[in-house]
Length: 256
Image (cartoon, rainbow, N blue to C red; front, side):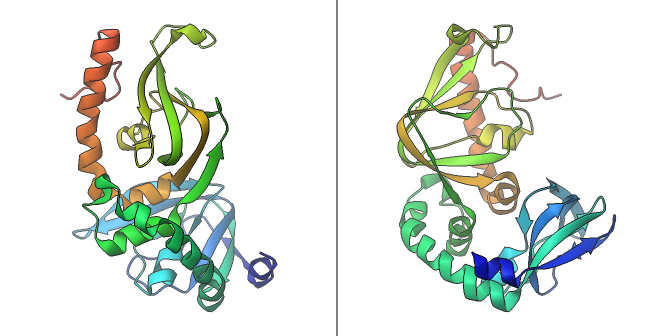
C-alpha cells in the first residue's frame, strides 16, 4: 500500500473539466479526494449520463487493466481534487494483486446464471471491480428506505430479506415481514439500482455471511446486459408483495 501512496500525484480540477474522455487511451487511474463528477456514455452518437460520483470513489481502471480505450467520459460538476496513479505503476502494483483475486473468484462468477449473458471478458471485469464484505449474525446489510450504493452477491452464508408495510413505525420490529432468503450464488440489492428508488427492503445476515459487493457506478457500467433479467425479476417481487400485503408497495414507478 505504501508503494501506491508514494507513487500517487495530486490533480486539481475545475468545474466543467473533462478528466477523461470516452474513446481516448488510458493514461492514469484516479481516486477522488473531493468534488462531484458525472459519468457519460455515448451510444449511437448521443451522450447519456449514467451515474455520478459525490466526493468519493475511483475511476479509470478498466482501460488500464485491459489496454482498451476509455469506456466513458468523466466530467467535473464542481471544483475538486483527485489523486492519480500512472499506467505503468498501476499495472505493476494493482494488476498483480488483481490476478490473485481472479484466481479466487473467476470460477464462482462464471457459475452465476444471471451473468451468462455477459461475454467472458465482461465477466472478468466484474471479478476485477468486486470487493468482499463479511457480516456477523444478525448484522444489517442494507436498510429499507436508504439510498442504494451497492449490489451484493452471496458467496457464503444466508441473507434474510424483510420488508415493513408502509405506515408501520420504523421502530416496530414486528412490522417487518420476511419475503425472501438468499444463499450462495444469489444476489440482492439490485432493485433500487434498477428502479433508481430508495431500498425497498432490508437485508440481515443469518450466521456469518460473506458477500461480494459492487458499487453503483461499476454496476451501471458493467451489468447493463443483465438489466433485462433483473427487470423481469421485479414482476416476481410484485407477486410476492401482493400475496403478503395485498399491494405491490409501489416498488416501481407506475407506467402510463
